[in-house]
Structure formats: structure tokens, C-alpha cells
Image (cartoon, rainbow over all chains, first blue to last red):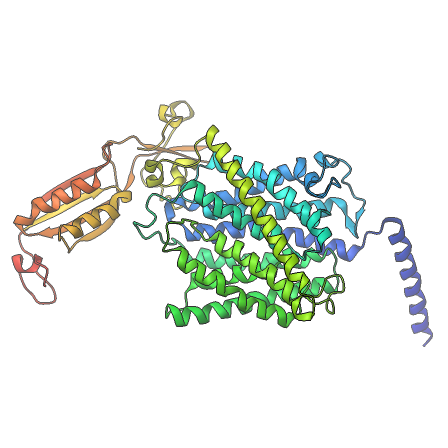
Length: 448
Length: 116
């Protein structure tokens, strides 16, 4: 008994000490630990996306497609630190941040919420990277790599940063009360609409509609979808910005919504195409994850399950219809992310309830139809802005440099043309060159 | 009978198959092969190791046809596989001693004529 009292005494001293420390810095160790892990989890989603997309293209474009995701780690990551973070999260006005934190000025180890400010910046940076990488699925197998790099660099500043500011940086959509837990509008509707516009501006691949353009490695697609799901626990769970009950709720919803989506997709597949497909299951996981993203911390777990099941309907039918049109959104970024994000954001306005998260709001089902309207406005605003700016930006870059490869280059495949490498080189017939005998044509066209 | 062996660019395979199908040439075998036809080598670099790829990926088609079908087949391949640059490929027409259809043991002319 005495021992118990003693330990209680020690505990109260510790608690008091912790409170004092929190008053001084207000950094919480468990929140910080969870966000450190979440940042790494979200970063892993970009290589996972590389596998998801890389498996879906033909083998002669496998490296180029994967590189489009990987290069975003460098391009978007660098620009986020230089300016993007400041434009997104600087105080600024309702539409854009400012230059106050450019080059990470004043972003240090002080508390931002309950975690170090630098960590918050890095966590948000991983979102900027994956959003840019998502776009590439619409332009694979034909967009020139240099033009793509220029595009995502500028896009990250003039589209992603402002939209991020509107929703999370204290801009006008957050003032209006739009619910976007982890980026349904900022990440998915934004990337999805950009992808649609990019596919329209670039035009379809030369063989599109004439030849079957089949996935070259379906196991890669499944691997990518699996690792994306894993990383998404950091994406949604980390967006609570704390290791608390809301993070747990987001985590559970991130488990249940894709589970429902996967099941829903297999049922549709079974009754419509008569075969339950692996590419379909991988796609379903992504659609379910996208749809739960805006809702993760605002809906009940059973709500999330229903949201997941419902979310596959529009995306499933859009994907099957799109493949029969001239619209070559090659890897269906718009159907999966644009429409998945739209469905998720609207369902958030229906299923959200303040009883499970007092920091959220009630949706239509809980007597607040106004929330659905706010959600619709936020999606429309993001879609319109990102669509128009993307169109102008691509036209502008097209004036300076060609956006797409010519027919010959497309025929040879972008791996050799853009990178001088092959995904599956056998090494047969390769002759080692000395440094001084590099042929002339290495600087010109390097293939015949 | 003749055996038409055609070496073409992999990127032209769908066009060639379509042309052959339209010319009613149905039975064929496709192999992935590597070879060199005098075209400029492709140069690849892996972590500073620069190599010249002397062998390029090619597709080889083996088509057994009756004598009167040789020119139809050759024309279909030439028309659909040409790009105008070095490396478009070659067609070899070889004499054939005997052809046997495994399922029916039909021989020669009957064996290379598709059943209707």
C-alpha cells in the first residue's frame, strides 16, 4: 500500500513536470514520435506509386513511368523547402501564403501545435511530392521527361501551394468550414483534374485505340497498391497531427474503407466482367483510400465502410467507359483520384458527425445539409482553379519546349529515349566503352 | 511450300500482324530475338558504365506458306514493317522439304492451307 502511494506520488510529480515542460515548449513527445513515423510512411507512398504506375505500362516505358514518380521526390521536395511551404502555410491572405518562411526562414524546432515546426513542414512536404507524382499517370508513355519536370516544378508552386493554403493554411475554404481531413480536395481532386487536363492537352498515345496497351507487370501493380495502403496509414493517421483518439479513428477508417471498396469492386467485377481481376483489386484499394482521405477523421468506422463500398461505383463505371473513348488518361488518374476524391468529399458532407469528432462537423445524415453544399463548393473551386491553371501552364511550357515525344521516340519506348536505360536489360551484346570513345551520337539521337 | 522468315522491329509487330491478317495469312510463329542489322548502336549508361548495345531487340516471324502465297506474304510484311530507316529488318524465303499438320497428319500443301 505504501509502495503504491509512493509510486502515485512519483507519478504526480512526473505529470506536473510534463505539464511544466509543455508550458515551456508545448511539444508533445508522443505526437512528435507519431508524426516522425507518419512522415516516413507518406514518403514511402511515392515509390509505391512508382510500382503501381510502372506495372501498368508497357515494359519499354517501365523506367520512365517509375522515374516520373521518383523525380517528384527531388523536384517537389526541393521546391517545397525553398518556397512552396511558405506559399502554402505562410499567413498571407485568404488565397495565398507569403514569403515569410521562404528558404525555411523561422522554421525551426519550436512548437507548431504539439510537434516541432520543422517536422510539420516535412510532413506536409511529403504530401506535395505524392500529389505531383499522381499526375504522371495521365501522361505516361509519351510526355517528354524534361517538360514533365518543368511542369511539376511550376505546378507545385502555382497550383498545389495555393490550394493547400485555401484548405489547410487558413485560407478561404477552411474559413468556410470545408471538411478535408487528409487531402481529398488538396491532393486527390487537385491531382485528378490536373491529370484530366494534361491528358487532353497532350493528346493520346500514338497506339491508343489501335493496339491493346496492356500492363507489363501486374505483380508490380499489386505491390504498389499494397505499399500505398501501408503508407496511407501515415497519410490519414498522421493528419490528426497528434497521437490521439482521432488518429486512431483515422487509422481504423483507413483500414475499413479500402476493405469495403475492394469487396465492392470484386462484386462488380464478378457480375459485369465475370472475372475478379487483380488490376481491378489494386485499383479498388486506391479508390477506397482516396475516398476515405477527406473523411478519415470525421466519420464513424461503419460510415467509412459504407463510404468505401459506395465510392467504387462512380470510379468503376467511369474507368470502363473511359477506355472506350478517345480520352487517353492512361492510368485513369481522373477516375481514381479526381472522381474518388469528389465522391469522398461529398460523402464526408453526408456522413460526418461531431459526436465522433467534436472538432469536425455534422453532415447531411446528422441534420446539417449545409455541410454537403460547403463540400461541393470546395471541390468545385479546387477543380476549376487547378484545371484552368494547368491548361495555361501546359500551353505556356509547350511554347518553350515540346511537351511530348515524337512518334519514333514513342515507338522505341521512353526508357531508352529519355533515360538511355532499359528496365529489363539482358546485357547481351553490350560492349563496354572507354571514356574517350563515347560515340558522337550520344549527344544526339541515341537510338536508331 | 516455302518458309518465310521475317525479322522486324518490335514496335512494328502489331502493324505487321494486322497486315498479315488482312492478307489472309493466318498461321505463324513469333519469336523475340536479338540481332544487328547495321543500324546505329544505342548507348546506355548505368552508374558511369557506358555501354554500346550492339544487339537490338527484334521480332522474328516464321510463316509456312504455299508457293502462290509467298509474294502476298512478303508484300504485306514489307508494306507494314518499313519505317525508312536502317534497322527495319530482312525477309528470307526458304524452301521447305515437308510440312505435317500434327493433329491430322495432313502433309504439305494441305498442311499449310487453313481450314475453313
